[in-house]
Length: 545
Image 1 (cartoon, rainbow, N blue to C red):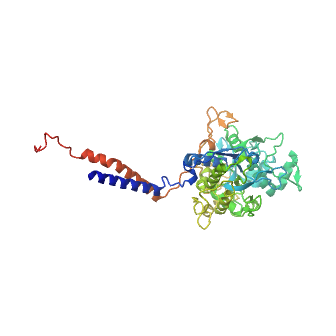
Image 2 (cartoon, rainbow, N blue to C red):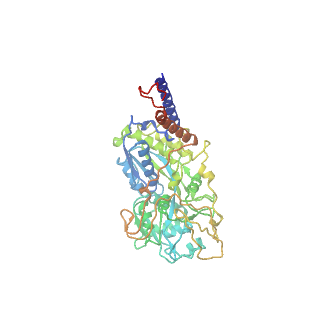
Image 3 (tube, helix red, strand yellow):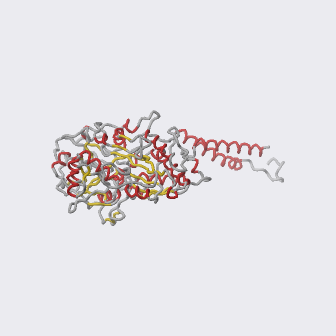
């Protein structure tokens, strides 16, 4: 009888433990049904944007460790990503710009393969630089858009140019030569920069294109994803965002400046220039500033259009919100809608689940990687695009099932709503914030106009999420982007940041309770046996001893 009671108690405790584990979710992550061992997903591969590469690499790492999905990605540049997708080399592509961008004289189409766009992550193209004054790193540089355009078209060639001094009233900038570092491969970042310059500074861009021999479209120089380098200039071209960022970050390359996705500056612990917006404030591409900026983005909302969900950023460039960062945009996942190139339904199932993950779970901490989460309307539209993938039937199909904490139930973008106004010292004028930017937290002491208030500011990024740094000196391996000898360079994609599974106080409480019950179930019988009175041998029974 006692034994049977023990069995019943054990079974009851075991059932309770099982129930608690189910409620706890064993970590709080909703695993799509197709991720179970009974229905393994087919491997898929893709490639493209290096602007979005840090985020995509993190996502592929997460789904491999959490769900055992085999999803590979190659950061080959947006142009190659689109091309390889169209040729059937990739199951999916990632690009910062759509096919056939407006005002471009570069042939770019995708004949013979059906596709749709799905926005995956927003961010800012930052202006990363390497500059010092008297051996001390500058971390609070400011630039107007016109000054930036003149730097990247060879008009401004030294750091003490009057236009740069006007942007930086408290810095006694040196006469160091400026070395612009541009992309040598076709890239969405280059396209975004040239689209912006063509619209905002057409005379400067047209004059430069005339120097490099680029043809005009309707009397103006067209946009391009392959930056034209002026022969004989100081301009340097490197492949990939990691190539331009790592070159700029080398200790010996003082005077360099480049355009690169914000995450690279964070991970390399390097500063970025604050860019002057239409409201008269210098801002950097923090997650909140990007979210505010993209509220002005105009979308192609015609589902029948081949350019459905592509962006028009013209109103972002001219927004009068003081928090706007003009070079804000987002990247696209290019999804197949046909079975050409032997795209089987099994790979479609993987791609659909991966896309659903990107829109929901994957958006949770993209801000810590240097990006900005997508607004609710793009998430909803993206969920509809996934349904067009052959064989695609993800478990997560609705906003209600989407574990995305970046927006509220009424569609409010929490990042944009909570983003603070820039500091007063970020306003164009005689003062200048001294706080560091991007991945560099160190302040820069004023070197001129010492009597003026430099201001501490509150709009700069803390850079606390940086995961790599460049230190010391040493030679550089240009191919790998690593630093030899006494220097150390860790690129963003070399140390992926694990996005933790979501959890709540109740989830963790019941998980701990489950652990306590398991321990109790294991230890109590042992303790009872250990402390029970030993049974006397027969020859001592009845002796009273």
